[in-house]
Length: 216
Image 1 (cartoon, rainbow, N blue to C red):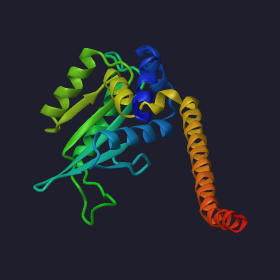
Image 2: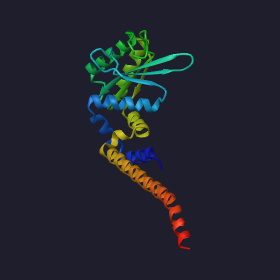
Image 3: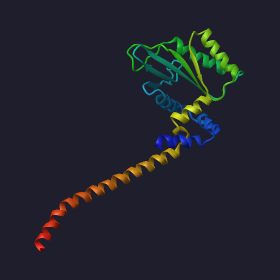
Image 4: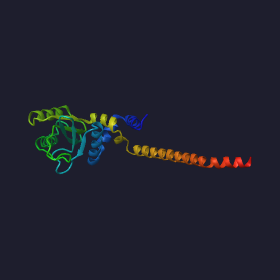
């Protein structure tokens, strides 16, 4: 079993609810860095940029993918906490961010010119009610003429477990890395000793043979 498979196995030993609670307990900067790592693992050839700042223009991260024909830019809006139908002000704030993503071209370090968002991904780090989801999808499609994908907490728990289980394991990962380092250092030391022993045997063998010849 590889190191990554072992980490996935350990993460799956944690209940889904506890993994959900772990994700919801992350502070915003740590969450953004974890999402950057997650999307980089899922989309190996993509460029993932954390844009969260006063000049973010609605997006907390962007994911840039390219093929031979076109470039696609997904703007990611991160919402922390539960989102239900009665949380009208929170929904309005999210819709405002999504609208900025769609309407305003953004500067990206990988491009000389400004870039237009192809689609918006709402990362919902918490539960989202069916009514809230329906309202968001309808308003983005009908009023903003944009494309919205909602990545809810169940999606996040599943994808983090499969692609970046380290987020759930914390100190256990550090202990695992330290153990691997010690194993590698031990292997290196043993290999080095064997090389020295082989070298010494090669140097001493002619001497022993000459001594044996002279004694005879």
